[in-house]
Image (cartoon, rainbow, N blue to C red):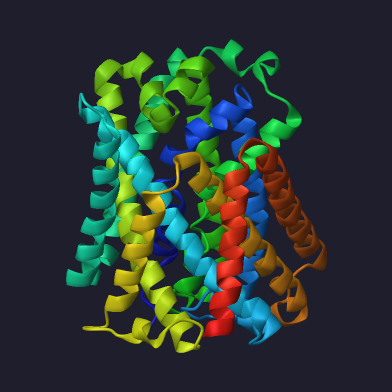
Length: 413
């Protein structure tokens, strides 16, 4: 029985994107693009929207909770490419959880006078362990609470946009304050992880009412709404606060942006919104990744221990997701996590776009749009990795290590 309406499907997409990503990567974008941060968010949004076309077409034809995993398997069969990419997806969600947890600690640390490194690690660990316990005790709470939390998050962000708009200084957005074109595009690719999440609609495709009509609508509407939201947030942020101040406080840039309009109260409101957003995003991502691990283990590509479940909760999936997320979040800094996360999803979305092209006749998709989406996602990945190789080579090394680990896991299991 199909139980999810169009509004529910849209909330899944928006909730997946407007998690902790925007709070975590806004400062990174400003530090690279400066006054052109809005352009960076728009460029990343276009790549996401084109990829959403592939997901929409694939989801209508292959309605399965496997989502991305199913699409790649249908296009390439059961081989090293599909197997390793499925594992890369599982690893990429671990990185996403780490990103959200790091953002949680950055905003949470602003409430303490002594914001030490030890405190940051404690907050990171709490942000991952508590949602994991909630997932084990009551997974239904995760599902039921997400719609409410998405509404609260959007309301708070819209509030900040409305009250801060009159304080915008347009000269801060002028071309004279833009960085180089390469930096602007690279910033867009680094923050691409903030658009990750719309693909979760595909995992609910079999439960969405009138899927032929509502699935495409859900993908396009949710991505377009988030593009508009991110563009407005970036305008308000850059227009209200100098680039120097934002870079200094880049780990909690959006909270700083609320100060001109609302003072310390605005700072606190945004910080609380960030804590709520990142916590709920971690909650939902642990929920989704535990089930993804269950599906992959069922295909024999991860240890069979991940198949252990109780009350239809994949307990070992939650445990593994929690453990590896804790290790990642406490050992890699925020900028590296953002780069690795964006690179991981750009690679996966490139493969999904290629999958859609291979299945274009079956899914009834436009070849030219699929070629464009494949080229743009591949070009975006190349630009991100080449730029990062010179500015943050360790992040590229870690990303390559993730690819190697995915291949090794495939050969082992």
